[in-house]
Amino acid sequence: MKQDYYEILEIDKKSTTTEIKKAYRKQAIKYHPDKNPGNKEAEERFKQAAEAYEVLSDPDKRARYDQYGHAAFEGGGFGGGGMNMDDIFSQFGDIFGSAFGGGFGGFGGFGGGRARVKGSNLRIRVKLNLEEIANGVEKKVKVRRKVQADGVTYKTCPTCHGSGQVTRITNTILGRMQTATTCNHCNGAGQVIDHKPHDADAQGLKVVEETVSIKIPAGVVDGMQLKVGGKGNEAPGDGVPGDLLVAIEELEHDTLKREGDNLHFDLYVNIAEAILGTSKEIDTIGGKVRIKLEEGIQSGKILRLRGKGIPSINGYGSGDLLVHVNVWTPKTLNKEQKEFFERMIDDDNFRPNPEKSDKSFFEKVKDMFS
Image (cartoon, rainbow, N blue to C red):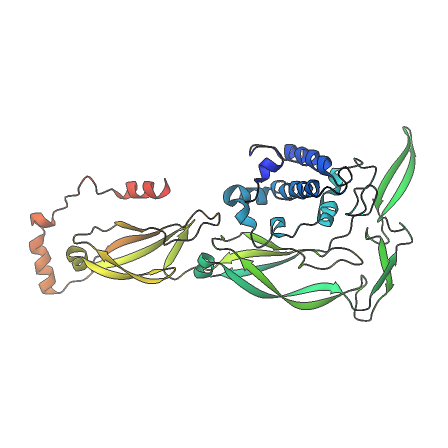
């Protein structure tokens, strides 16, 4: 079971963005590979801290994590194996400043090394019906992404000599100030094109169409975003590819309405069925089922079918299916029907006589949201 992100950074859920950043810096410096050469446990702790920071430092991701836990990022996210040391150094290197003697280098070249450039992310939207959401599904989608062209070669940038940065020294009233900026010649990659094939762009990349398989866990919600690591655009030279970000769009069901993990179904019966009792076939995620309605059932009665809702994305069981009984009143009657009900107006058996166990409409609404 994955460790809680707040526990990894040794903070609580009320921590501010500044406190989260400070906690991550402390953990990352403590377990940095420069300080723990060859220590696999320290390297793993270093990765865990970066994974926790990547989620908790983003307000949207943090909100989803607080609500759904690690399951919010299943099928993507660093927890799914998309995080590597180059991701950490390229994305979060600015947090460490000169803590390790100048640039926060890439994996295998710490302490002054160059952070490898990461390719841009791609974003797609995947539409899912309620059955796919309830059961989980694997989707295959076609993605147009940039990859390095066949035959392209790169050489060390002559301007920054492979560092990806250019150092400038400026004389000020406080003395000589040294600053490092991204190299404009190679855009921080440390490499420039040596040979460019005819079908490549200025960076040595070309667009290809690729089929990507996306595993979507059960219980996802509309608007949730999953990440498929390494399936975005590639980067020039020895850079690392970006990610494919998958936004979930939930399609509306014909008869079932979703509310969190619960489902709602409106069942209409006529007056005779309500009085005499009946059995009705209703829709569920797993197909149609038949339920029995007792004699004298009241309009507004809610029948709960436990476990017939949507599985929790956190793995805490499934929601329920709530069947709302609605007694349909005919708008027109023939002469015989009208005469019958006229006789029933003053009949004691037809006079409303709710029991204490019969909840009012407002009590039912209160129960639904409590």
